[in-house]
Length: 419
Image (cartoon, rainbow, N blue to C red):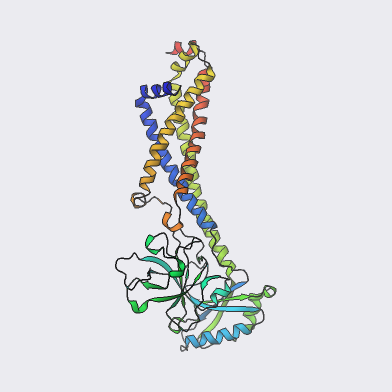
């Protein structure tokens, strides 16, 4: 049976060549849709490693007509006054550190080296915070200790992922976590090398992103202190009711220090909700495009096989007239289609695997999953192959079975008379 089907395919090689090309192109498109859709899903539901329940952002503003004060001293005063407020558990200050705020600083580092030359620079997010930041957001320390603010060159690193990789999938940065002791900034001045004091669990202060990075936490130095930047507090659960309104009413005068004044108090969960909604709408847009492509693939294959089967009505009628059962004829046409699909899947897989190793797809503007960033390995290739092949098989069987059934039901005499 299989040998006979191969012979049929070869005899109709001109038409089948175009069908095989169509199958291959469609397979590649669906492969990359599956790949990118999975990366979005993984990005959206990834564990961020931070707990923002019962946390608030206190935002200050500054009057331009009043003289500047010592900003670091202002922060110390604010810390004392906030900690005395009933219900406040912990307060932290930071720069570019607000979870889900959407803003961050970025730099490149190399590990355990006095020079940059010869080692790949890996991008990281930089966060300048006081040590209480880890308590406010319940960030667990896995190894070492937190900085205490006395060493401005201290650093705490958050791994890239749960596997403990510190700076992505680059092989140069696969040193064991326990052996990471220094990180050197990209500009290569060894006097700016940071001493790693501790390693946290994986943390992401941005909800969504196709390119997650390790976090490097720095102590907030007096030079970077700014009361208008991030002020974050954790309160006790029993103080949650109307906390923002009560705090604003009770502390407005105490927050008027020099040119600074209290602007707002908002739950950080609101930032998370807004970030999630933005990400969700982006995902809906991407999945809508993928759905549109899938529907067009279905209609395109349906049309192609409809005309293909209609063009073979005389062959089908002749086979039925010569004694072949209608069921056997339909099975032969479906088997022929699935065999062509199998050939296209093999060719398409080879094309996709090779394209994914080059920058060609990204260069022409097609969004693809960042494999290195998300630690996606060969298992995703297997998922792409299985999902794409099964989908195309289902669509193909449906697209060819119905017109084949209609063609086989026509009386052979009528078909031959038409010819």
